Length: 264
Image (cartoon, rainbow, N blue to C red; front, side, top):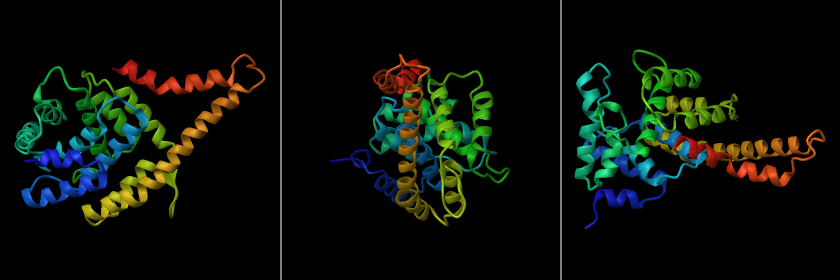
């Protein structure tokens, strides 16, 4: 008999996966709100950008579920320290294997686990960065550049995260993409705006999946093409006659792979 873990991992469509977790939250009272969807969309964008060799389906599933036992109260220190461990135990009861549960437990550093799974480093970046962008009762959300500074010099000070540099490059890339609407704004600010204006988690999922994602993915594709064309224009510059278009294409095809290899 298939478990819940089998069911959700077999579902490859992210929107359907979110719907599954939504109904689980209604039945089991787990933590699942707009912030989880917000962070998962950032995870999707980062994985598409970085091309890191990991199981994307597994990571997106973990992103939806790693906070199932989170208590939305930063003043409850004990809960902050233990929610990831309690969540991992809960997920094991749903049929997830020990490695998946370990990845989810390592979303923060309180487990003390060492060595950490590489997927956990991705979850950590997404969870902390995404959380800092959103408003909280005690503060408004940070701007992406502010959040990166805090992520590197406060949250992860003295810690090693193998994908931090790649993630910072991703944020720099995505911040250069403006999405049009009533007003034009950077992609992450647009996501933040949709998050705040959506009345509930289902409305937010629909807006992200059926409007935000298709528009942004096309803009990202155009931006990548522009970067490639700009490089070819430099190649064709008469001041660099020995740098051929073939060489440029070969360099472009290896840039992302080289970044990944260095970080791993």
